[in-house]
Length: 143
Image (cartoon, rainbow, N blue to C red; front, side, top):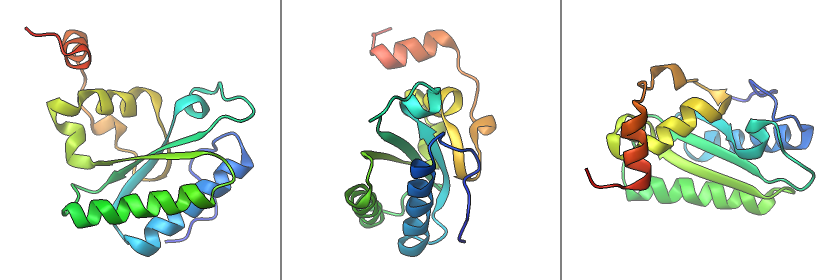
């Protein structure tokens, strides 16, 4: 699937073009595996400045099929980062991890601070979080 535009602009045409390149690379090397790509960080928050990096979160459908697939995905990320004219940081996660209590911080970050760029928007499917559970998880306080 080749897309000519992102679902939501990053606010920078150069970054939008990089996102489309990232999508094309994953479509080529891991077809059908990316569920969605989300904008993170300062660009998602709307407070990017000149020189800000481009932070992406790529959610794989279900889970990685194994270490080999994860390593291939990491290699695609590294290749995209090397060819990007803007510092590009890509975080990878399997969809199933977003529903796991041990990844509560990642799920909450996705739900509250990220914007979809391509693929499915699963933020509404993530459960609501109780603030005390979140704080306990993030700061690792024994209970």
